[in-house]
Amino acid sequence: MTASYVSGLFSLDGRTALVTGGSSGIGRAIAGALARAGARTVVVARREAELAETVHELAADGCEAAWVSGDLGSRAGIRAAAEAAAAVYGEPDILVNSAGINLRPPLGELGDDVWDATMAVNLEAPFLLGQRFGPGMAERGFGRLIHISSQQAHRAFVQSGAYGVSKGAVESLARSQAEAWSAHGVTANTLVPGFVLTPLNRRLWDDAEKTAELAGRTMVGRNGLPEDFAGAAVFLASAASGYVTGQSICVDGGFSVH
Ligand SMILES: NC(=O)c1ccc[n+]([C@@H]2O[C@H](COP(=O)([O-])OP(=O)(O)OC[C@H]3O[C@@H](n4cnc5c(N)ncnc54)[C@H](OP(=O)(O)O)[C@@H]3O)[C@@H](O)[C@H]2O)c1
Image (cartoon, rainbow, N blue to C red; front, top):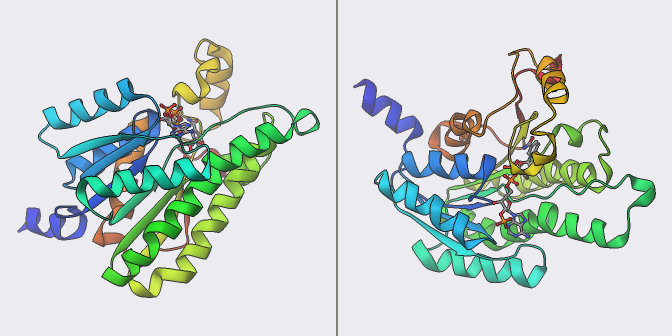
């Protein structure tokens, strides 16, 4: 009884998921969580070795998973990756946009190149993938669009530059998507991390003072781990969250409310 009750809420059996950035950090943990909860899962990123290793790990756990190498840094690349990913298991029911880059020149030194690169991966990919898959989800009566933003969507610090702008826009994109498709069973929400040690911020790995200072800004008393996103992602991908839409949900150990 308990198992079937829990699985009625959270099981992703029969669902198909596409996770961009699913080969590293937060995206990899989310892809693992969705796959282990039952979703056939396709991970998309550029580097093949990391993608293959991720899928190998999931397959060894008995999951159905596959990878597509694609560059989300251009509109053509985004569209090509979308088609290649949908060709594996069919149209996705769940789209997670975790691919992201954080280039850090201060705004005064920021050129068009950094702006364009940031907006392509962090904002245009979530937008275009939503345009590609959202209408089909709405037609089928079920869909889950999940974005990853940042504390810098809400406040500027450590040179938020173009990155903070892109993340603020992603939270607005989720609200626009929620407005467009929620009445048809498609929810759109954003997970907002605190500071998570991943390859994205490798430059801080050896800076014990800085990472301790960031941990001190949480209430839990430590920095985030990719695995901290597993439960929230399964919740947002599952039937359980059908009445949660347009929201930004902080998974940050209390960083944002400290
Ligand atoms: N770590 C944090 O503290 C933190 C905090 C707030 C928000 N976030 C957000 O969380 C998300 C995941 O970050 P993470 O920390 O897990 O970073 P990560 O470990 O560096 O992972 C980034 C992923 O994005 C992929 N990617 C980057 N550029 C791409 C491109 N042009 N085309 C396709 N894929 C691309 C990478 O694979 P390839 O390089 O192989 O393409 C990788 O799989 C990002 O949106 C980030 O902004 C992270």
